[in-house]
Length: 321
Ligand SMILES: Cc1cc2nc3c(=O)[nH]c(=O)nc-3n(C[C@H](O)[C@H](O)[C@H](O)COP(=O)(O)O)c2cc1C
Image (cartoon, rainbow, N blue to C red):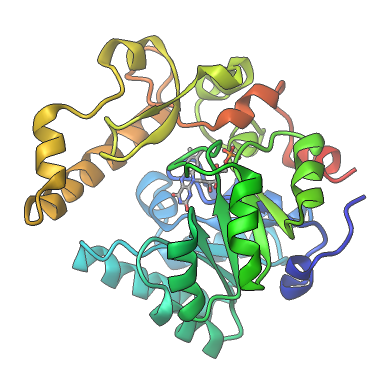
């Protein structure tokens, strides 16, 4: 049984477990199931609207009809797109109105979102991979940090869980370990390092409630940690994916023209927008189609410790036993 931590007390939840936001895998039933089982599920707004077809407010209301326990919202502060930032503001305001209790911000400067959140009693944690970004978020007033390490699914960091804890914990806010945790052993290790909780992504894809394609779930169950590779082909920065024959055939490095455009002061925003639009479409297609399509199946090294597809409640029971 896991003990209460500063994180569980801030949010009034039973277990120090976050079901991490996942584009395109965060369907409403998955988010609600993690919260209902005593952790906290995080809404990924692009996943909710573009992949799963909900109007944002209706989607949040649907999740709230499945659980009355706290849920969170992921806000990616991608300032290079004014349209996306404006959309994020609308999502944040709507979520506050609908009783969302937790914001997980990523990239950019979270100050504006912190001010909005704190006016509504919402707790804000910022995704960080190093001290420089954590210091900026600390100055903006965040309540805690999600430390994304070098084993994480999605955009991985480059520090180990221990090194990242040692770098960020001295700021004096609660820190959450994100990356590499697939079972209770991993969770206990993170808590014993001093983390106030854990964030899991890949483990929850291989669940009954996740609506990703069965082939994707099976690939996670079969993958070993060494089958996870970082590819620049999706977004221009490294993303952890399962090494499928398709990934092997196209390689993992961005081409020389893309690299050149990504490094230019003017062209980099344009190139990032192009990558974002392309990857949003490719990932949606890969998660809903079975094997045979271009298998961009994102997962972290925790896949090596995931051996079966299970209901979220069983995953949570085993994690927190
Ligand atoms: C398929 C997938 C999509 C993800 N999408 C997002 C996202 O949209 N926003 C975000 O902040 N993190 C995203 N992440 C990171 C997760 O929230 C979490 O930090 C990470 O999965 C933890 O590593 P693990 O997969 O080893 O458990 C994603 C991860 C995966 C596997």
